[in-house]
Length: 197
Image (cartoon, rainbow, N blue to C red):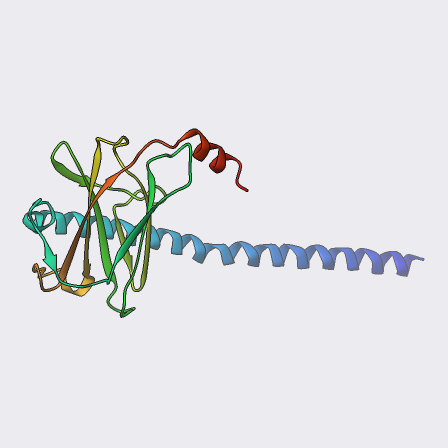
């Protein structure tokens, strides 16, 4: 009986030791994830600085209401109003880059004119007015004005990241301007949105 009891105690201690070791190993494995998160935040902060520097350097291109460019970075940017009663000014802009280059992504900047000046039009999820992707873009934004007599003047600016040091109209930067009037939903539309069929 004493032998069985001794064996049982040894077995329990072995299980406890194995559990502690496994837990410790699991704890150590989370450390690189924390490092990755910090590194990701740093990269995002660097992108914020990058965009601010571009806005200062190219303000005559980005914010000149008469600026236009025939360069084709993407074929077409499409937008669609979101089916939302709560966020009635919400729109989603989409575009696809015809030639994806993973080592040279495309930068999309979004602005909206408020009181005669272009202001950043921020994605509702990220809080940024820029998207940097190699192929497909999708940004969800809330426009400023609603009503038949209030037009939202939106500007999209696109260029490859490698060209950021020397942007030139009609060469390596594309500017697309939109005029979007958003009307209030009708009662029937609101009902259809609230109760999808």
